[in-house]
Length: 257
Image (cartoon, rainbow, N blue to C red):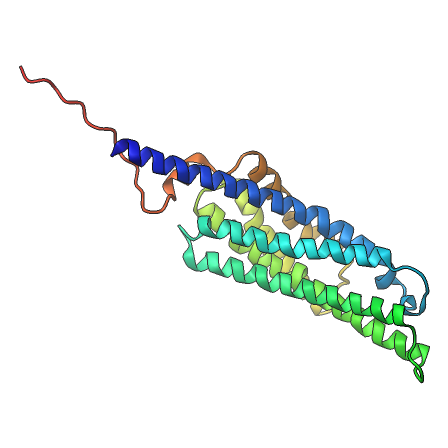
């Protein structure tokens, strides 16, 4: 029985290592896709007359593809970590999945809004329409993208990927506790920054926004590197293995005299 217990425990640990590796790689993918994707959106976000231009819209389409990959990676982190996190925090684990779904939905709406601008640009001004009307419609779609970015990566991510995930990893001792506090503190800072931008206290692209967002950026980068290279703490994996408790080896039998 002791050998069977060790085998089951070892299989669970191997599964957890695969999950941590997958989660780490997915977190790294979010970095590879999110920052370049935002930069590639530059032409449509910064030029009000982009919708009237001619030629290829390749950079914007490439940015959309990167953000689609970002959405997949975001959802993947939630699905991969959920079986591990629910062992110690079932309700919070579900809340984390919901937060990731909300964030990804908002990002997807933003992608569709900018792709619609590209379609308007490629189709040209319709008969009877005016260039001014096309600009107004395109700017409305760009504004929609701005709000989805503020409410998704600028607010929900702080609650889900920062506060909730950081607290669960801290509680389960799956990461060094000092690093977990970076997420617990950094996440709410992102959400507070999003509220400040919503209230008009400062612009979304500002020094205050960068300072308050930096801890969350460091936290997510740490998750990607640590989970990829190291994985969960070994003691935490054993402590959170479902349905198992540390078993003592068989007692030695003293021969009768």
